[in-house]
Image 1: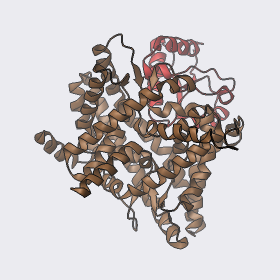
Image 2: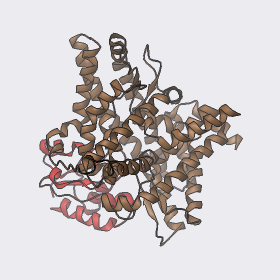
Image 3: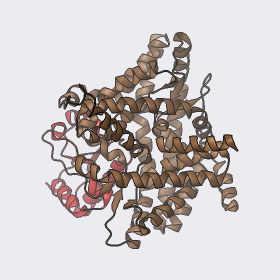
Image 4: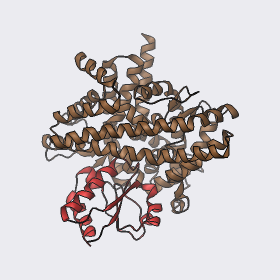
Length: 424
Length: 99
């Protein structure tokens, strides 16, 4: 084990662009991916990582100074810049123990399937990054590989149980047969959404309101378009920073460019990763033929629902206002604001059976938690990002992502371990 | 057979849509149709893309509401993610790419 960790540490110094192809290549050999495919995949993943890093670093360099002067001009509390979830995910995959976590989670999943503790088969290889993120948080806290791996395993186990619990609702409301969502940073909010929905159904005056506005997406659909929102938010930052007109336009265009380009870079990365997901799927199907299992997939599938999209659209301006006035929040949500708003709306809307009014109330409470968690995790998040090859602009102390704040299970595990560490 | 334009979409435009887009290209290759022009985007960008492009088919990985997709034919791409009922989805897509 120690030998493996030393080897991984050496490789990780080379940065994700070089490290990831090597790790993927080794994983591919173990899962018997076809050799020609494997070479192409490994190199493609490296290129994808380079792409994400290039775009995010450019974004921080272009927009960072304006964010900085906006904060100092107005004494605004949001001094931590949101660099977007692809940056968080890329830095997470570049965490030295990432490959080890993948194997441990696969093992935990197999063990729970055999002992009938879960019905969820986690084939969504990409979403393993959420368990790795928990492992990374705990590693930066304890510097202990063992405790960090244990935390990641616990995160996965809890996510599988929650996926089992929410599977009936997912099938009924989202109309997806034989599916569950063990995506930690989505399903982790399900119990809270369930509880809040129970609360709304007993409060007089709230319990009878049922809103299902069909026209929201038709009228305000542009809010969900990153191209548009990026430009608008960028220009707003430029104006608040009291930049010259030319610079306001540059900041606006840079923000729009980042929101459009980052997904494109991520698509390249994904094209490299997919053969692995498929190989692991085949391996699991061979080992457990004719099963009654649900297939665990990415919770991103929940965001297709029109009530969820409508709820998310309304949450975008609310999130911006919240960020400015919520006591204790220091995060300025930029790059993911529309995506995260929809992502967080999924369970509140599902438990409210499509009632947007209830969905909004619950999502509002959840968004407050997300902002505070993202603020709290900023120091560790910054360490993780720097280790993953990202650079801070002048005058920036921390970066974070709204996405980091969505990792509720990981955050709770991290806090419990911090508490234990403080006692001993 | 003329070159078709296909919108493949998911929540983030990055993860599941990349899987489905690969499948659509494979299907075109299998039936000898020209490789379609694929617009890979977010669910929330579908409306805008229909307005600015001549779209022949939409393949969302999650259930999209019809008031968004208008008159464009839609084939659910969820089977490509779950591995359940893949053949049915492949056939429907092949039909549209052939015409």
